[in-house]
Image (cartoon, rainbow, N blue to C red):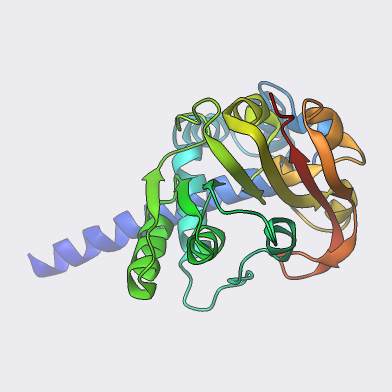
Length: 264
């Protein structure tokens, strides 16, 4: 009885890890594709042909496509749960330096940290007197942020949500932080949610950073793309410096933007 239970557990774990690897292989593939392919509404059609080209039989190909289609979103969350709660983090656990620079001397108000992860930026803002709110779909990372905030004695409001499901509101925030989380799909929500005079602070990867490395397309921007994306805002600062990225910890080209919503 115990032996059968043990064997069953091993088989389940093996299946889970195998499924995760199927997703990781797809993720590595999509991040190396041309921008036009990454932005396609149905990139899985191309990935199907890629798998066939590798010699996989049709049943295996369709099983992998179906797995990615049905469970890809959850597997992405699990990926970030592992990264953001790792015992030895492979990312900067201090607040983003560009964010610190942009809010220096600014009167604290209501701040939203989009894709807050384990809370490095949201907690720092709370320590500076901001009414700090953050959300992320990675529930274990959010739990870690809450535990850290409680340990430090700072007030932090959190929600387990995606950018699609979170209610950004309207004229609600004095600051919105977009630190390595993208923006293309929800930038209109961000602009609408800012109070007049409020700012967006964004740091992500420049397209140049993808040369020779795999980076998720959502956090990669082309030269000059962000000012056009956030054209309703006044550009307080926009730059594309060579610097050490918070994620990956390599010296690459970044994009950094601080935009302010015009006053009424």
